[in-house]
Length: 104
Image (cartoon, rainbow, N blue to C red; front, side, top):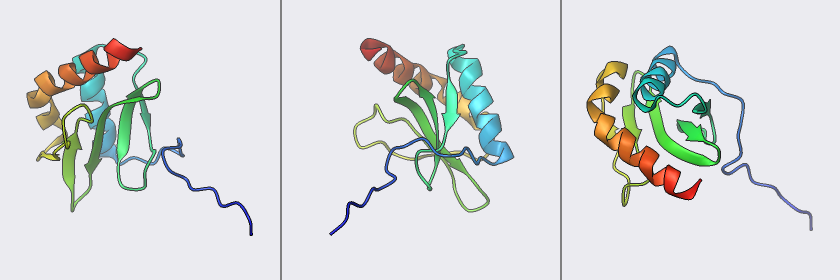
């Protein structure tokens, strides 16, 4: 019997679409945080993080266009049509940042 390691929650090589990179820049602009990083912890989405905390998780591909904020109870996937639509969710972005800042 051997030990099996599972790749859950570990930072992985960043592979993001151009639109996901645009979303990340919108998030950085809203928060004004230079320490915001883009990482892939899951095969299903990319995360904008501060330290170990996810500010937002998002996916933007031809078939799926959404963003979610982990601080929300049972985080819904907020549908977006374009990367610029994230600016319309700036209140949620800032609430997510406030939540993180309580703990860092």
